[in-house]
Amino acid sequence: MSVVSSSESSVLLSEDAPRNPASARLCPRTRLHIRLMIDKSLHADIAGEVIRLAGRFMPDVPHFLVTDGDSVTLRVRQGDLRVCQTDMLVCRLARIRGIQHVSAEQRRSPDGVVYQAMLRGRSWTAGPNRSVLPAP
Image (cartoon, rainbow, N blue to C red):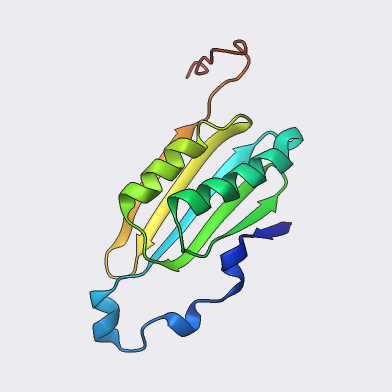
């Protein structure tokens, strides 16, 4: 197992979390896990693209990438994320060459699960300019 960190994720956010429970309700923190089943031969390209897209769709939110065999997990803890940001990121990740399956779950402390998705990646065997989704 290896961990790849974005530049801003080196600072732990535990000291930034609100200590007062009342203020925690006013500013709900989000935890996000996106698991990607990948083609192992494209691991380096996929990891770089995932970190780039996470920085684009979630600016100023610390995140890190954990790789384990043929899966990669993007984790975001205690961030201020909107569901639309997560959805755009998950849909974009499913379009990357070499990603076979994407599953995502976003939780917010007071609300529980606020977003959950399972997407199949594209099949890139149809030709250079087209892709065909695999049969169910």
